[in-house]
Length: 591
Image (cartoon, rainbow, N blue to C red):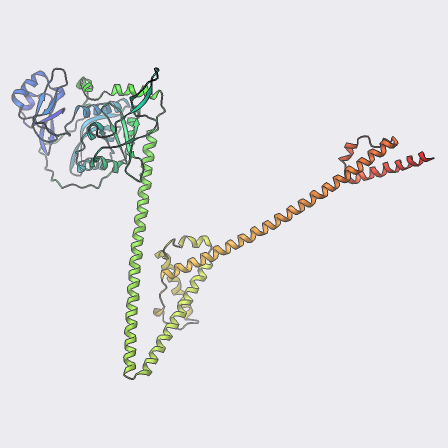
């Protein structure tokens, strides 16, 4: 069931049909007819005069006007045809619901508004405005939409700095029964002890796997790859977000969206510019000026009865409120933000991997060039040996010996200079800290970055010029090349030596700390033993004082326990005093 059809443009048609609008179809001027606004008089006129002139906006095939007794009037194809692009009542219901949602939030909303950019003109389902356009919404019920159409519409809006939110109608897009239901079956136990499975809506508190039977439409994959998630609605009026469950395989998961969060979710859409290119189509310049509709297209009377035949969002909202009494919904905006960040991290990782692949290719090229140089040198050496052998054969032994001596001398000189250069590089490296050297060392392949290599070579050239004026007698152009591989290996050697030195110093300090700890423990043990011995002496002296006082009736020390807490020397003095009195008392008792 389609809501719209078009008539070929004719000025006389406007006189008979009061509610037609000037529109365009494939760069042609046409008259757009809305089935929901046709009166009884216009119905008779269409039946008699215009019945062969009505065409579909999508497939351009002939249509007829249908006015059933107990259903909403609409257009239908004369010959049954798989045409999904014509606006169905479900499609219109979604548009109407989103229109109302944004209106309730105080936004200015327009439908079927035309935008132009890149030499293209597109018409959006819903345009949302504040001071400027902030969102274009495209409701899509058919999976057969061309990828070029998605890219073209999205790019036109993007050129005008407007994000495009695509909303797919699940049941129409995938076909009923071709995807895991947006409901689940749960086992319910009854009071009589029996149990049965009952169908319930998907939960708000957790995601659910989303599985499509058969091939997934390319248009869905295109939207998923572009936005990293897809906003959808089913014929029961419930909204969802579908995304990849992980970044390893292509498993999908589906989340519920509260109807009160639908506006925020749509406004969270980012601006996207798509690189998809289709066959170039030449746009013909229209012979009239298309006027954008700047009025509120929807009115309550236009959709009276249609919502019942389309999607009942009021019932869906009531079901949602009942379900939320027993559930804590997930923060769907946070999930969307996490999805964007997750995909961004994946893109960065892929960029790093591509960079590593490029470096490997460069290393292979360097290796191949090096191998070519070695092969060239080997061939030259073989030729040189052949020349030497040839000269030997003709009796020019002396000249050959002189040549060999020259080659050997040049070789020794080059070896000496190269050794000197490498020693200078090593001296510079050893003068730097481990923290300064480590960032320049490669991880797996002995190859340093070009800027560091060029810097070192320039430093060495200055060093050679200085040495040449003092110690060496060589030509500047004859200085042997120092390969990046040799510098990197030397850098790693110095780093290893510094790390080993640091480790030895750390071990030495650790060992020294352990020895100091043992000494402190030994002193502590010695102090404890001395204290025990002192306490034993105190106890012995106090017992003797107590015994002597009891035997003689002396009362010099009234509290023995209090005396124990005094210092040992004080106790010894007290013991001496008591002992002196005790001995006198014993002597008196003998006489």
